[in-house]
Image 1: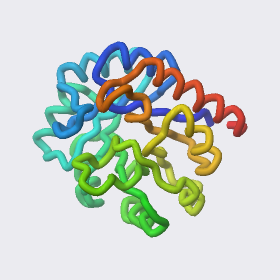
Image 2 (image 1 turned 90 degrees about the vertical axis):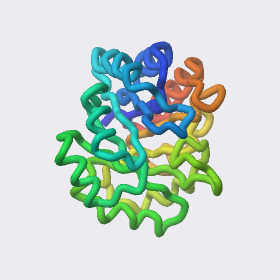
Image 3 (image 1 turned 30 degrees about the vertical axis):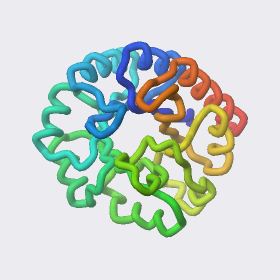
Length: 220
């Protein structure tokens, strides 16, 4: 199966085009005002339309959003998936999935082997997991901090666990990340930026090229 790649935190047509030109099949839009990647819903609506025209899936990323906020995002942006990057428990995830009729990706923070146990309660509820590094102490952001975790920990996962690897990925280390983790899907945000929240089209292209080359070497 071809490597699945999501470029997250996009805010401009130029960045979306670069991601799609390089073969990204998920485009992430962040709706969290504390993030430098926060995007206006109307802007995201137009960008999501561009993604859908080229058969990529727009993903709406939220952090402990209430139903009213989620309803506005879903109605305006029409995402193909919701990514929940807060402290949403399994009951909340199931409720969101049922109310909005969209697949849900639950983000979980990983630092050590025991952190993988947090996945278990969400099996059969979340459609997919995003496994990101725990944020540094003092960070207001649950993701997009540019830090990674020990990718070898993922070797303990059941091969049926559907997840995206995230956290500190860039063009220089993505090959190593794939080789060590065995991941079949990737998510990148800060690793393709020139400054927090500022996507660099050359870095997007380089990341996608490096990821595809590594995937080919691994025989996928």
